[in-house]
Amino acid sequence: MINNKFLIKIILAMFLVVGVVSIFNTPEDVIAAPKKKKNKKKNKKKNKTKPVTKKKKPDPKAKASPKLKKPIAKGPTFPGEDPAFLVLPKRTERSDMASELLNKDVVAMTDKALKYLADAQSPNGSWSDTQYKSNSGVTALACLAFMAQGSRPRMGKYGKNLDKGLEFLLNNVQGNGVIAADGNNPLGPMYEHILSSMALMFAYGDMPWRPQLQDVMARSVQIVQKSQRVDGGWRYQVSREGYADMSVTANALWFLRTAKKAGFSVSGEMIQKGVKYIISCAYPDGTFRYRFFGLHASPSLGGTGIIAVCNNGNLDHELIPRARDRLQYEYSRYSIQDFLERRYYIYGCFYASVAMYSCGDKFWVPWYKKAALVLLKMQRKDGEMWDDHDNTIYTTAMAAIVLQAPLGYLPIYER
Image 1 (cartoon, one colour):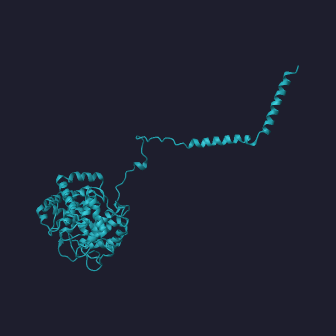
Image 2 (spheres, rainbow, N blue to C red):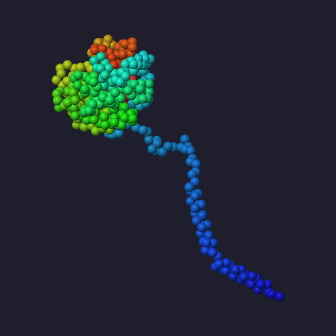
Image 3 (tube, rainbow, N blue to C red):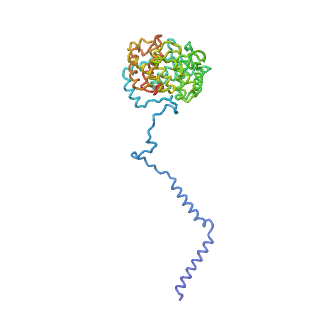
């Protein structure tokens, strides 16, 4: 009998021989197979990281990051450290003012004024006044009145009227860049050019279908800058010759500041010279004369003086409280009938409105309430306002802008 132990050894030896032979006779692709298995495992590991997992919804009770917790500061209307960039009031401030000041009488009066303007528009988009037929300046003021209501080009209740008016202004850009229609002021087109440029500047970002608007605005700015007189101010003509007056100068500075905020290049030295001219026209009591060599102060120019000085960022200038207190004194002392008998009342009211608004609610709210009562008495049945020459378009437009100031849509009202 064969020993059992010996038999087991023989069987084990046979298994070893068969195993070695099978290894050497196996094809290369079979031998490499284990490597592929390893790669598959690696790919599986990679694929495990790729699938998109559902993001967890943020817990509303979780604490916000420091960046989100930081409150948004009340900043300037245009980026920069320039103090000339005043700030707009917060929405809550506007809503409080609107609810307090826009009573039923004021709203009804404003609606009638805007309807009158819309009905008076010519087929070519312009507006004409008794003294100024098809005038670009009058048209610009009507456009600003609709913007103050909240309408934008082709949008809002008066969007179509506004769009037609702005198109009229663009169609009357002259070869030299001056924006003036046939019915210009015979003394010169500077008023019309500045007011038209202001209206187009406020619509600058709302008319993407008019890419030429940027070039029109750039040329408008250059024309105003090149027309500054030697004494630092501006006058009716597009020229550097002759003496300036305070009214046109204040409007020119206003437009240049608006252009600067919109990103156009404006000379700081030129602004300084213009403000210096305004200051030279001031009296110590806060009143201003129409021209440097004038003798009598004009009650309509107090507001323009404040606006012009603020345009340079001189918010703490000693003239501002004097002119402000003078305006406040007049509106607290004079009766409604006194203002109705004043020449060019609405013109002065328009600039005083912007000036008093910039001084804060303490001064502006009482002023607004008195001005609204005067305008209510001045308005005729069909909605129009008037002046001594029976001009009814520019006066109605200015009055509508003043009455809608609490809404805060027009960026001329800043603090």
